[in-house]
Image 1 (cartoon, rainbow, N blue to C red):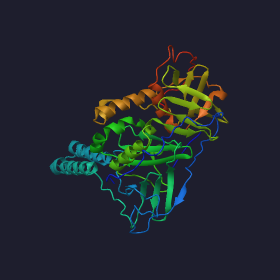
Image 2 (image 1 turned 90 degrees about the horizontal axis):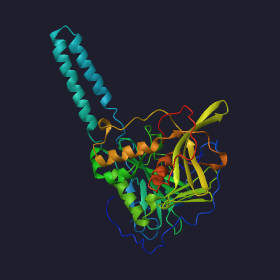
Image 3 (image 1 turned 90 degrees about the vertical axis):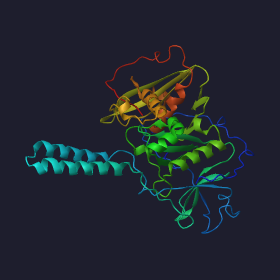
Image 4 (image 1 turned 60 degrees about the horizontal axis):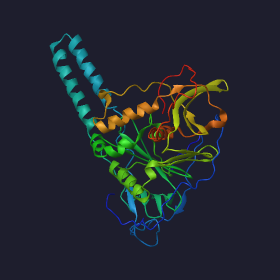
Length: 415
């Protein structure tokens, strides 16, 4: 399938108004590939740029990347908070041990003192698990590692190599910013899509940060139960995570440069043919779908032989007028994700409503494999954001019933 993979809070003066606004309406004609091709990983075209010398001012005219730039410093991956709730398991075992000792032990000492000791240790484990881990930030210029955003480019910096432009902010070179998250909303990844590839930057967030940045997190699409797709890797091969506040600041800065970037996806299939989503239009090959007028779309799932095995695909069927395509990707799992309940909520009503929305978009109906000439492969990470954009478009009368459904024995969620 087609895939595009890796790629401070002081205000600064960035004069972006003088630059023409970018547009994705001049994208070339598109082509479509048949299904069955393997996933491919593409990286952005990385341009080397000089790294500021130790002690040099970041506004030095000798470094065009550093002129009026905003810096976003990476956190130490070893000290970043991890998604998940692994600290609860030791506490659960200790609690179970305390109950067993109380029920089975015959000695008064074992029935009273030992359970109390085990319960106390369990409480300590829970409290330590809730404590926000300390994050260690790089301290330039000794070990500058992170991102700088100027009026010209978004660049990645590390002390081991020259700075690298990951996004060039040129007129008529559109980029998109897609937010992806876990179901618990404790991990956020910004996927910056461009014609040359996709660059990922992530952040972990605790309960307090979820409330503080609930508006941004509610825009993010739930990827799945697994977190493999939510890894953000820098050009140096190491994880690239920011503090949650700095990732939010980076998204705000990019939105200031191009207000439409949060509603845009700039993708390509395995052949490099562009697939562009704007707030008002979806372009696939030579087909254009106007999201301001009624259209038909439906989430589907199907299977077909692949050698001695059976490949299972998820897809999004779209039709408007004479244009009809099926955006598809491999389905990583057919295990049900389960319904959303208050017991596994985030505690923020806005985020819980967003999770329910995404779980609804994951549901798909089993069907016969679509015609090969209608298939367009995309990275599975962007299937849900595409469906979210389609769900905001007006639905045509009878949408979702014009294609026959043939049960294939597949059930579950799709991401």
